[in-house]
Image (cartoon, rainbow, N blue to C red; front, top):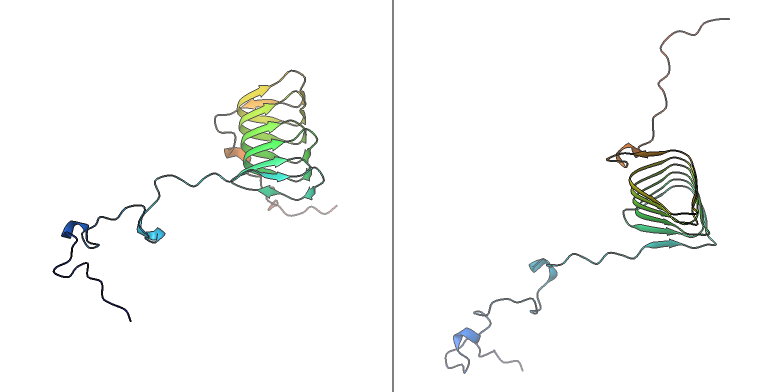
Amino acid sequence: MFSKSKINEPGSTKPASETETAKAPTMNDNKSSSDFTPSTPKAKPPASVLSADLQITGNIKTTGDVNIEGNVEGDIRAHLLTVGEGATVKGECIADDVVVNGRVVGKVRGLKVRLTSTARVEGDIIHKTIAIESGAHFEGSVQRQEDPLNGAQKVSAPKPSTEPAKAG
């Protein structure tokens, strides 16, 4: 029922350079993905969008991009954080790039921080570069640091005293 291929047999009409054993592999060959590595990196995934009707209580942490349109009570850490015009964030915002169009109540840390004309920020901003558009409302302090993300770890609670308690 099946016959043997005559590609490599003597008397084949194909020259040796065209046979399967002499052919160099190419990217179009049906090889498994582990046989070669792609020359281009994977496409960046789209930003996660938290819609306007979403209320989140808790911290958000991602290595990707986040677009907040709803309300968040908690800290946010991302690569690119965009706070939408109708959004409110009550907590610390930490990202490489932070764009505030809405309201933030809490500390903002970023390599690049941008407050647009519709921004309302109540809290300190620690940045490498900052841009504040005319019309933005900002209440707090601004501090430039070479690496503002490095100090983003929470300060631990003070250690209890080892002195004996005094009786009163």
